[in-house]
Image (cartoon, rainbow, N blue to C red; front, side, top):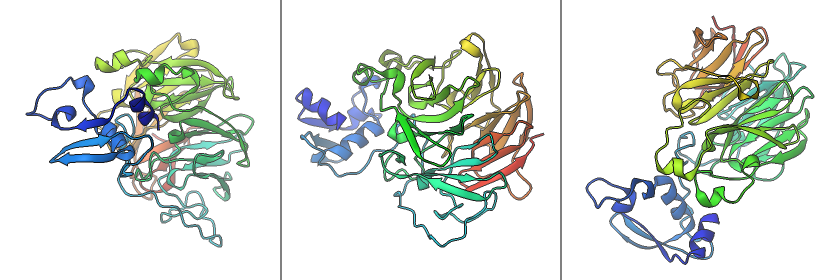
Amino acid sequence: ERVLELLNRYGVRYVVAGATERGQPGWAPSNPGEQMTEYAEGVFRQAMREAFRSGTTVLYEVTDTISGTGQPPPPPAAATPTPGGPVVAPTIDSNATPVALFTRSSVGANPGQWNLPRGIARDAEGNFYVVDTANFRVQKFDPEGTFILSFGSKGNGDGQFNPYSDEAIGSGPGGIAVDAQGNVYVADTWNHRIQKFDSEGKFLLKWGQFINLADPVSAAEGGADVKFFGPRGVAIGPDGNVYVTDTGNKRVLVFTPDGEPVGEIGSQVTPEKTSSGYAYNGPQEFNEPVGIAADGAGNVYVADTNNRRIQKIGPDALEITQWPVPAGMWEPVPYNEPFLAVDEAGNVYATAPAGKAVLKFGPDGQVAGQKSDDGSGALVRPTGIWADADGTVYVVDTEGNSIVRMGTVP
């Protein structure tokens, strides 16, 4: 609707998509900053009717309402690539025996089963909360791994979660965190918001809507401190504030537990930086931030994915250190969403989706260990991670559709 509103405002009748517009080699050159991306053309294809086609050149007709093929665009470059295929509503057997948390099972939607899960967190009582991404829900287990309850469904209402599109299987809610009072915060990525629940899964509140700071029209709408492109990771600081990685806008936003804005850490994305190919690789700048964790001293750790580094930002952002992630660990693969955790000793743990491993860094950022097997099988695509105070690590294996108790990482 937003695309059509802008095109109609400026009296645009047709959108041309040809070799020049796409910047294809061998054709008339066009400004790289003005070329039509695959994502942009996907939006036109979704919203508009084809008025004319000759070879690969297409004219899309602008109308007052969405009237196109309905073919959704692929995920934008800032989003994690996901395999194709339709998002199918899960089939639930209400009589099925719940599967325990650490029991490997087939893909499914029954209690304790998984469909491309992501984030994991524990509360003060030791209960586990896991984001069951493609089932659009959160599942809760007791400290022994016995199923307790689940909450959430597909949609954009209160307590619901959305995929990027019905063809982007595996997209949906991502990170999760639990505060000292037992309240649960979930990154509802493609509804562009954070949702807060109580310990029984009752919806409490939400905040956020879409903003793209690289787009001058979107950025001019205001309210940037409470809007997201796509929130991925969530962490709770020792002061109770909620830290969120706003991945597409290359920043971290900080809120009170009630969703009131407190501050921002990040690159200050602007249309000018985007058009000039700004690298976003300086200190306290991020390129595809995903995982986030906070320690008891108020330090915040961010998985700066495309810069292949972890940044440690001290209280009040006065001290910033960074260290690289070993080669081959954060390379582009499906579900390249590295999450972070920190234990009581200040060790930092990171999942390596491409390396199929968990990495351990000492408080000084030096590599202290690596592990890819819990003794019963290797990780397929590790993403979400939780570390207990004593260094016991739990990992979400997204493509393995399982939750793995790794033990300690040497």
